[in-house]
Length: 406
Image 1: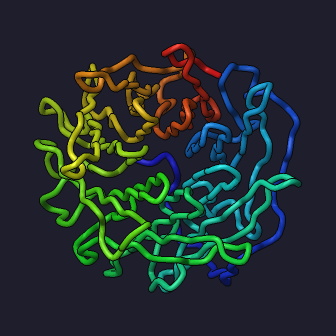
Image 2 (image 1 turned 90 degrees about the horizontal axis):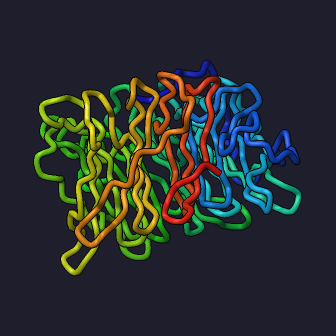
């Protein structure tokens, strides 16, 4: 499920403008409040917030309504709202903020519904960079060299000096789903390569989720290579070598069944990958969900643990979102506790992955969807709760072996 509106056809096609574009970073503020004074709670001055989140441990990015993305920076006094980012020439209905990613001084934001018709590409991705004068828009990326119809920026990722944007087929098209890789060149960003699944004609939803760590890229395809018979497929690519095909395909976990949406969420840290399968049947109940950890060893990528909700129930959608940071794994379950939501934490121990307790801030109302989106990096956990009041994101940090709101 997705809390954002269904992509629509915009009534116009906007000319593509590649490369650097003008300065656009609005609403700078010197405040250090985290929304209403609540510890660890990020809000957006009355706008709906928390539909999409990203963090690298020093910068937090939160999608808000009205076609903006709020950026917070970590300083000596805590988290400060640095800017609201808005793209040049994009409108409120262009889906800006559908996907977000951050690494260092680079933020990437997808606008899934921008421009396009049935005959031309739909969507764009924007690159913002933090420089001496603050945040500015430095590029608008479009589905370069791809046939239409096309939905661009369904998922984005950034890392290793590269930007990754998934591009999916649309409305009955036979064109394959792909992930495009952009790299820096002449102070801008240019298309460097296009990643395809091994069997493009039969693989659906390739790029439903994308995660990157250095030169390693993990791509989820929620219906895999046979929509009628598989739970989903996850591919691992190594950009330092030949990318004409994946370096590995993660083994499908035993017993999860077709339609489990294995690969709808992915995260990678070094030699570990965690994959969500939120529609997994558990105990005969539908869409309970499960997460799976894989580790790379001498025999390649092998299963290293299954993570389940300690108290599963129907339609929990456990593992709709996942994150990993060294020996910590976090798993979101937006339907937990009558829709209030929760994030379940697991820690690597000698005998496997042990649950260390669910996280949920006090005062959540029913249907807050806390955990629908999350991001974990360098001991910082950012969790979206898009229906908690007007919407919010919560920041946690690891202290003395426990999580605390920050």
